[in-house]
Length: 241
Image 1 (cartoon, rainbow, N blue to C red):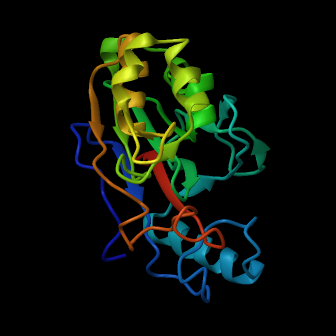
Image 2: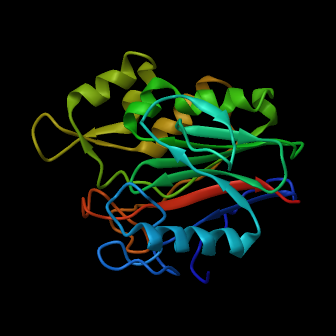
Image 3: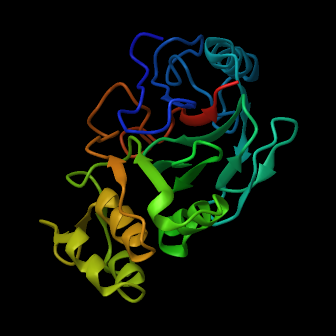
């Protein structure tokens, strides 16, 4: 579709990726129009048609997950929907898929272009280690891993309480730099992209691209914080057949 995003990163040529937007589907407001989430009270037939359009656009088999803000990363399997927040594959044509509407989608590949992974990271999953779990699923050395951070809530929109800041700082004190005081006393503005980069760097993964989006202010994307009754867009990565 015309305004879907193709990540700009130096991945191997056989590694393909895409981020959908709200455009190109059949769902009605407030899910208009390419809602891919089947858990948000949209009409199921519309969601299935939207997913069919995505599948046909790239001739891929997306592996959908039941995301729960955890750290489980499974082998991608288009034939079943499992409870997890990340998946990996080495099978061409199967797309690891993360659905979001403010949470952080992260796409991974190894430099050899033989394995890819995708993760869904809200702040809870991020603090619990879902990105680290996705990295481990590649079974590669840190220097051999590339990561692309997709559209998520931006640092000017992500206000959190002190408990969120503490959850990160207790594990990795340097993450203090990802928080600045909000105009509301006791609150902080959090940079989810910086948090992701710092946690990955702590594991030796420093070739990280993307970021710089804000789903709350960019109308191309669904945003739960902007409108709690909304759809989900998808970030996908796969190996070319």
